[in-house]
Length: 53
Image 1: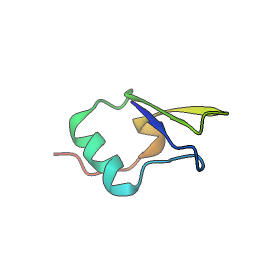
Image 2: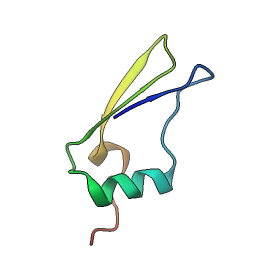
Image 3: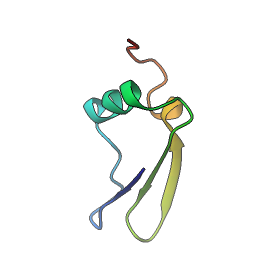
Image 4: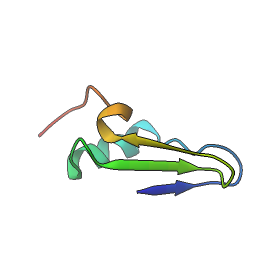
């Protein structure tokens, strides 16, 4: 998943991270960018302790 914002690094909020955790695997990649730099995270890195169904 790629998340872009020209106004700063757009890290996903906690609610968004939990929805991703419910539908994606732990190695799912999330890329955040402001157009000048980017960072790549796995879902496990962004939300290490999460509710699992």
